[in-house]
Amino acid sequence: MVYTVTFNPALDYTLNTDNLKNGTGVINRAKTADLHYGGKGINVSAVLTMLGVPNKALGFVAGFTGRELESLLNADNINCDFIRLEQGQTRINVKIKSDDEMEINAPGPEIGDDDIEKLMSKLGKMDSGDFLVLSGSVPKNLPADIYEQILSKLEGKDIKVIVDATGSLLTETLKHKPFLIKPNRTELGEIFNTEIKTGTDVDNYAAELQRMGAQNVLVSLSKNGAMLLDESGKIHRVSAIKGKRVNSVGCGDSMVAGFIAGYINTNDFEYALKLGNACGGATAFSEALASKEELAKYI
Image (cartoon, rainbow, N blue to C red; front, side, top):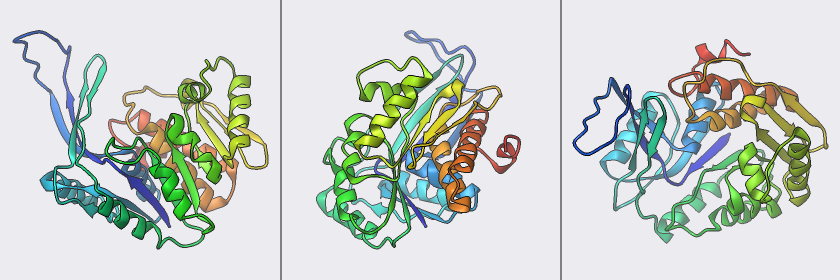
């Protein structure tokens, strides 16, 4: 079973409009409006469900927006087991698609110590061989080391942990030897306070992350595809999927989901990278997360 954790899920309200204009008194009218579930862990769960991989989405919801989020997930047969907060509302993020893309992300509800204990209790019931995906940022009202706290609780249980985060939130988990980490090219450079200019740079800094504790390092490289440094030290590469990019939301999450599904089904890193790359590309070329129909074009 794969478990995903989303500390700050959202309803994504996406508006499509032509020629977005700014200024006092200017009214922009949307051609279409769509309300969808969002959050990095939830995106991973959605794509895993599409791929037929059993999984459960964990996290926190609150208020009427939280109920709507659960309703949307249930409608898509996405298994979720959220902790309901007593105060606040699950956030609504506004995404505007025009000549350019714009996002306005709202703050989420307060999460208390008792709520964290409830999450830890759920995670403590995971079995040996399960996968756990920790992805995205952590709300300001939570401890900055919450990922480390989770990994410490799971120490010795043979849980394969995937971390998709940035900066110290990612690097501080490396002492716990996560199964997989997935920085993109920019995030890789930010970790080491440098600019990643060549494929050799990618390889070298991925190797440094492995020396720091990561078992496998997956680096998404946008138009240059992706590379994987696996636990044996072997480097795998795939070229970018060709197509017209219309969406930037959830591409990395789709890659993570595809990689997990590929690895679970075959125990083969090369195939896992190929499927992950295809899922990321299929989402990039879709208005929302990749569908089976879109994915079939690239695998």
